[in-house]
Length: 574
Ligand code: PEP
Ligand code: MG
Image 1 (cartoon, rainbow, N blue to C red):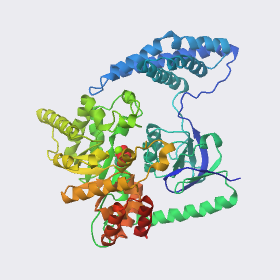
Image 2 (cartoon, rainbow, N blue to C red; image 1 turned 135 degrees about the vertical axis):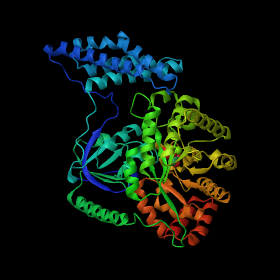
Image 3 (spheres, protein in one colour; image 1 turned 60 degrees about the horizontal axis):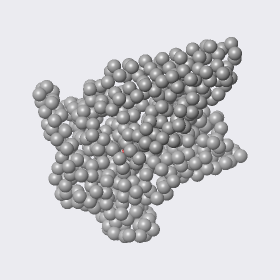
Image 4 (spheres, protein in one colour; image 1 turned 30 degrees about the vertical axis):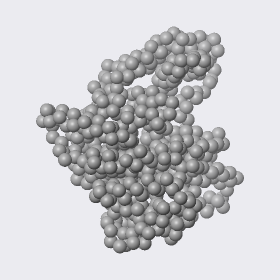
């Protein structure tokens, strides 16, 4: 029987497959009764897991990298103290013995007893230590349960697995890059959250904001994910299944046709060349960038290298990764964005990002507050610049003094390399992301100090409309066609063009074919998007005339009526 759920489409295409339920709440553990004769073995298993977790922390402490934030060690010490406390390391033994519980259950039971007490504490600092107790417990749980097991990669076409989760963090999502899932669906999340962005980069259909998928669907149930419309069909009947199979093969053919455009230069009907770059999260994404025929990397989101690990990547490790990408791109530009940690992408040290992380110590703010970590990355990027055409991109700038401080840090990193006689590209370009309205409204201060601009429409929309991009309850208010957003985007492109300053769009708007003509009409000539989106955008560019698009785009940017903007956009795209 068909049962349909509606959510927000994240990555287009259709997948027909089977549900694989994934829980990120690692603390969701099953309870089972242990046989009387096995109780002491269970206690021993618990003790071993505690010992493993402690040893893991000690090993991390012994190898704290030079650029690690000052809090890192304190944070490890705190977790060690929590694991040493008898209320956690001994009390669960009594639960195992007294109630014949399995070790995982006993541990979580005891943890909940402890964390409930935290909720009653008035001091906000102490109250937040609840998260530390949970994280310390997660370490023990990981040791108890072993590594999270994922199904065998590359199941056959018909057995494609569709990940069904309540929520997935960007860090969880990036782990899925190693596996060949057929699709993703989640109950929560916004369409431009980083979870959605990574899902899109996997090139498989995905839907977020389905609300009740996780609780409605059973493991192994047949599903159809229509990532174009945001429709999830559970247990489809044969007629619906046949219909979707047909649609799926048509989409496959269209995709094959688009691939033929790989070496066709991107230019409009009236002969204006347009540069199409790719966004990447991990070095291995470069293969796809080359496959798509991109003219370079317009955005390398380096913070993903920092997720899913307990330590920080060293300068050498980062250097190797950046060099690998620079070399693979063979002198085509590689735009390496400095760390954009905070908000929905946090390492443990940024857990202190505050009550409103999107407005807190994120991106360049975090880097300037952690100069050692920032300098480590800057040195690594500069060193890699010797091996290709590397450019530096700074996220979330709002103040001129942040640019000045950043340039001073780059100067410091250069001095260090000069002293050590390490080569780097002395004319490396430094650009700034325009993703905070304050930046879009004070462009001159940016253009005086920087070599290029890149508009991050995902955050520009989030911050202009005051909508948390990760929150599905306000996702319906996330509107790229809001007059204020269009005004800021058009103004930034126009102002940069007048000053002959290179400007790109690297937010999701650049990969949306419905927006291509509008952006071309505004004067944009550089687009950066996921490699999978590139062929469709190239096709759109090839079918567009700037002479026709410019007047309509100007009308759209002038109107203060979103409905009229929508109507004009339909006309522009006709
Ligand atoms: C953006 O904000 O548009 C952008 C490209 O950066 P990110 O999505 O990584 O925040
Ligand atoms: Mg951004």
